[in-house]
Image 1 (cartoon, rainbow, N blue to C red):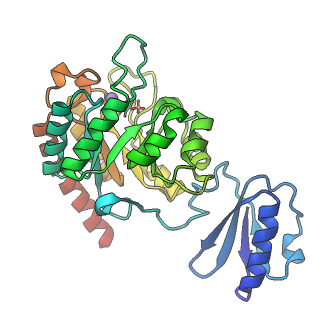
Image 2: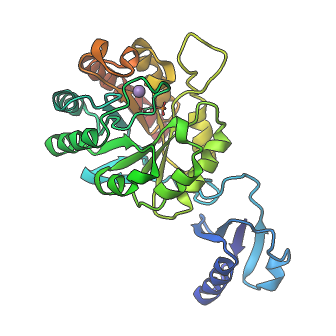
Length: 340
Ligand code: PEP
Ligand code: MN
């Protein structure tokens, strides 16, 4: 629900209504529109009296929000959210933030070599899985806390903020302390207790779309994180399950403009998991940028043929350098076009 205030509403009156609504257990978000001031209410509004506008003389009218998500909705937050990270890195706000690195951290030599290469090519964040959500219990499961420590060394040497996946709430404290962006993987997009816990950590969360989840379900998952009021969310399209078998997943490029229309949150696209094939990564990265993505997540490995995970969709540092040139050109075209 959105309460639209009359222009003459005083600060004291606004404080009064906010207080009353929070006593009703509702989450309150102030919305500054072009000309009007509004209060967004998330939660169960069914107990509120229908005659709000007559009850409070400073209320112009009340608008029902029909979407099942509220805090992620552009109606609650008309302006684009920009997620600010250490080192002046921003996700959203017109730039193109590229997250690059291996599927999994495998060794100090591997992560340092890749981190240095992707930094030189212009990546702004380093990725690397330490805790891996593998479909088979017999596959490499990641180096765990040792992997996290190697990521920290790579951050120290390159200055790149680190993005890595959390799988269990038991590591929340460690991630809150050591990680710059906490990734929630596709398999955990609807792990609601985990979403709530990371929402309390005060660290940006990269929320990947579940392989069988709709856009509305993804935005409701984002609300689970945002309810905590502490952790901003970056959305990530990474492909969905369809009947098509030529690619690992079907990368839903249309999700980019749809998400940008429905939500204020920045949108990143992962064409590596989205396609499953190294040679499709660059064309789909360009398509994502052309569609308006705020960033990309790209799997890069110095020896893809020997990678312990997802080598078939990983590109070499040489190809990553080429990709960066392509997407930078595409991004410039899009930005020039917008400013005309
Ligand atoms: C990953 O990014 O390492 C990953 C496992 O991706 P997803 O959750 O999208 O499958
Ligand atoms: Mn992977």
